[in-house]
Length: 317
Image 1 (cartoon, one colour):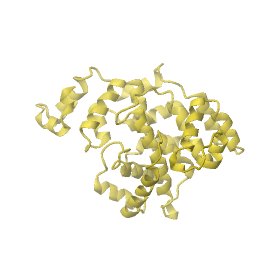
Image 2 (tube, helix red, strand yellow):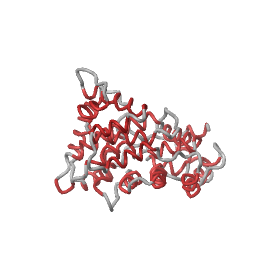
Image 3 (cartoon, rainbow, N blue to C red):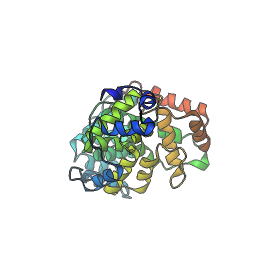
Image 4 (cartoon, rainbow, N blue to C red):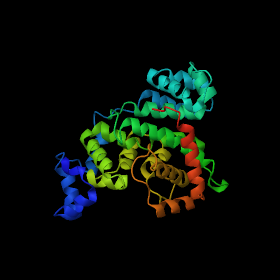
C-alpha cells in the first residue's frame, strides 16, 4: 500500500510497464483480486447483502406523485422512521435558517422552515441512503458525501434561478439530485470496502487528477456507473438515474440535458471548496459548460460565494 502514497504521475513514469503496467499493478498488488466492472454490475443486481429499497422510501416516492399530498401527510410518513424524522428536525434547526426559537414539531419544520419540496427530497434521500453501510470519514465517506450533497442542492437551486427563460428546469429534481448524485461512493463502501479504501487513498494523494480517471485506474469503474446501476435495480425514475450517471460529463446531450449540465456545473464549482469531491474541472471544459448554460463565470462565482456565505454558520451533517 505504501507505493500508492506517491503521486500517480511519478508512479507511471517510474513503472517499467508504463501506464498500463502501473494500472495493472495498482489494481492487483495491494488488495488482491478485484472485481471487473461487468461482475460489479451483477454483484449489485444479485448480492444478498444489498438492501432493498426501504419501504418508507417507496411510500415517499408514491406520495411525491399524490395530487393530494400535504405537509401533514409528509410528516405522518416521515414519523414512521425516527432517524429520518430526527434528522429533518435537526436540519430545520440549523443556524443556516436563523430561527429565533427552535422548532420541535415535524410539521412545523416542513411548513415553516424547510418547505414541502425540500423536506420531501431530504426525506427521500435520507431513507434511501440509510441502509448503505459505508465508512463515515474520508474524502468519499458518508459524512463528506452527505455534506457535499446538501450544499449541492442549495447551489443547484441558486444556479437554476440564474438560468435564462429558455433553459428553465423543474425544481422538483434539484434537491434530490444534489443529495443523491454521489450514491455510487456509498454503494462502493457498502459492497466493496477494500476498493472504497483504495479509491479514498489514491484520491487523497492525487488531488489534481479528475476523480473519474482515478476510479478507472484504481478499480476499473466509476462511481457514476455504480450509482446508476443501483438506482436501476431499485427502480427509481429515469431522470434521477441519468443525473447520477452523467454528473461528471460536461459534454452530455440528451434527455434532461439542462438539468444534467446544471448538476455538472454545481459539482465543478464545489470542487474548489472544502465540501468538494475530486479535482476541479479543466478550465476550458468549465468555460464551455458555462456557455452552454448561458451563465457567465462571474455570475457562477457570485452565486457560489453567496451559497457558501449563507452556509458558514450551519452544521448540515
